[in-house]
Length: 129
Length: 416
Ligand SMILES: Cc1ncc(COP(=O)(O)O)c(C=O)c1O
Ligand code: FES
Image (cartoon, rainbow over the protein chains, first blue to last red):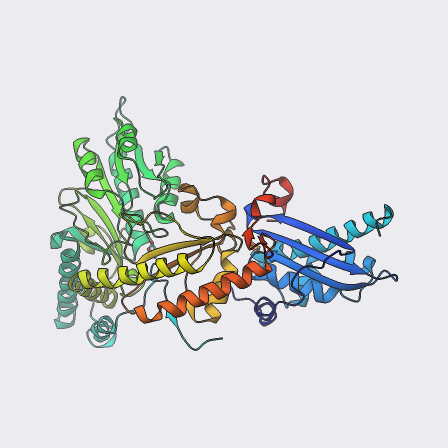
């Protein structure tokens, strides 16, 4: 097997920001258990459109857990617009790279965060928050 | 991180037995002769190869001159299937193309990919299904045989779930129909009795590194009178069946490993099964929603294959590694092509659940004393991952993955 970078190993061994946010500003789930990966990201956003809390739960490989953990760390403190622009390459770079076959796992993390932000924007437009 | 190392992936590969290593060592730099040469060094090498041939023959109850050495299980499978196919197609007539091969859906890729390769050249292959215990139905086999059938290639036992096929009956059916029968016994040799005469086998593959011998060496049994087309041409070693200067240290190691496995077979079967059964009992009793894939009947005594809902296998393997435990998984995420195990699919395990699988394959060096630590570790890791998983409801402690399941759509495939 191609080895994971030390940073990836650190994040799957000690994932940050795991769990559920009750009544979050937004949440998004992407993936499909049939393919072996599914990820939910929860976000809380303050009145300045800054992400104050980001949490995740993930069913997936070591890389999927590491990218979810990494993206939660990256996103906290960013504005919603900034966080929306995090790409899978940004996440992979922060982790000192991923084996090529595992790049789609970082896609999943970026997609899940975007889905959570979409959900937040939708709720805001509809006056739910 | 743990200093312990409990290696329970003996179906992937196994450590070389110290007695085997000791027997091999002189053949690297002392008795390093080429077995085809005339002086003493060459004669000694030839003698060593012949001794190994006898040791391998005894393990499977073959005659000495029915054993040919190869570079391993994959080469043995390729040599037999392609060799028979190329030989038999030359006998094709207008009425009988002699191009039909029967195999199963759960073979090792060394067999499956070889069959797929032959399909490109006009061979026709029937892939027999298996039941939920991973065993073929003999009536399906009988029904699949036709005039043009030249070869039945069905594994002796399966590398993932350890299911053992009714080899003797398959062999009988093959004989009645005058079709050759090849069996990939890479996982069976040294684990359960393999007897080519009793089990009506014409061609059989084995591999050194699965029986505490070296990697890169294996053997085929070719029953007297059976003819194959040769694939590796050259200096005519191995009676012209497989050219190339003999891998003397490897062959000596395979021979010694076969001898030990033969002597210790009964003892090892008992040892393996004791550990296996303790693992099954304790895991299924302590961990909620844990299951054994396949059946406990007709199963290799050294194989257990668990399934835990709500978690993914690669992360399970990585966390167990941190605890010093090595096993394997059929999870898609762990494979080169991100496709899940074809064997688990064939026995009807739903894809979402096959990801959470763990194979432990026991070897002579494992100890029953480690079972409690292994079970505790698995339990801890499974709980940790379930806690992290959106497919597990922590409040009610139940699997809720069915809620998320959808058909695989374009968008999912795009990601790969
Ligand atoms: C059933 C089976 N056949 C063939 C092989 C290939 O053997 P080798 O690794 O010696 O080429 C293996 C090993 O993975 C196996 O389990
Ligand atoms: S989640 Fe399947 S490969 Fe990463």
